[in-house]
Length: 174
Image (cartoon, rainbow, N blue to C red):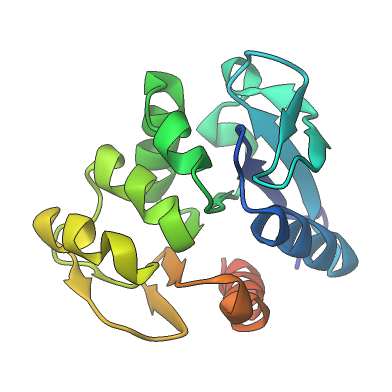
C-alpha cells in the first residue's frame, strides 16, 4: 500500500443501511486504511434505518478530494438525502474524474446518478433503482460486484464481502 495508509471516506446521513457503513468501515481499518465517516454537517450523529447511531468524524465542508483516496456510498435511504447536498455530489464527481475510487452499494447508486458519472459505465445496484441507473446512461448488470475503471458497485448487504475485497484490490493498484 505504500508508505502512508490509503484514506477512504464513508458518507453518512440518516436512514443509512447499518451493515453498508460498518462492514466496510471495520474491514478497511483491518486492512490498514484510514477511514473517516463524513456527514452532511447537519449534526454530529446520524441514525441508521434501525436507529443505530454513527457519530461522524467530520463534515463534507472539511473534505477535499485531494485529501482522500476514495469514497464509499452506503445504501439505505441515506443516498436520497446525501444527493441533496451539492458539496456531497461535487466530491463524488471530482473523485471519479480524478480517477480515485468511487464505491456505491445498494441505493448508493442514486448519488452516482446525481453526480452524472454513469454514462457508458458498467454498474449494478439494488434492483429497485436499476431504472434510474439505466436512465443515467449506465450499462446495468445484475452481478454481486462490478468494477469499471475506478467505479465499484454492488447490490445489497449480502454482497459486502466481495464489494470490500474489490475496493481493497483497486486501492492497492493505485
